[in-house]
Figure 1 (cartoon, rainbow, N blue to C red):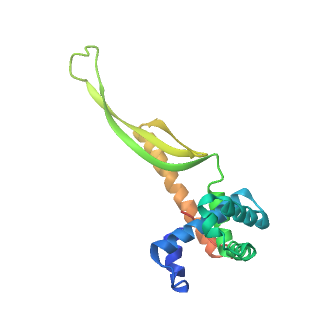
Figure 2: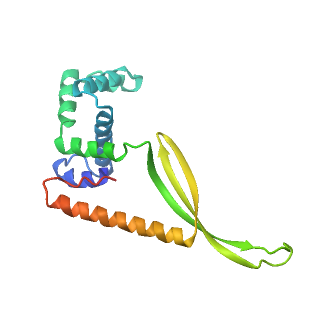
Figure 3: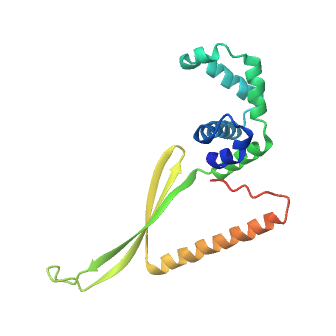
Length: 186
């Protein structure tokens, strides 16, 4: 679902539009697919709503004034019925159909001094700690939470994540042996 990648692969079929402009157009078309798929909106209603919204905005009134509305609706419908893009947009929707979706992660490693009874004396020792910071999206909001880890817990997390990578590779190998496509989305 990367517009630049798609633009590069379809660019030879659209010689009048190239590069960044084609990528922006593809990005807009993909957004339409995702909105329609996530809202499960019937095609006719979706196309009518877009045409109505475009003709009602003051910015587009002049540009849209000479447009043949029935022709516009037919062309938009044809554009939004491309099976491959419809399938990929559904995959994008399924990938993010959770109350919280991952955004970023960071591990902060600290040295924490351990003082004895006399806090004016130099520390008696130190411990190494890790703080796992996970950033995520909750609807339109951005949120984060922190979890303290020691070295053993950090090693356990790495083991669990490596196992998840192995399971993913196994499933992808299985998909290659079937007629199901691996719709990896960004």
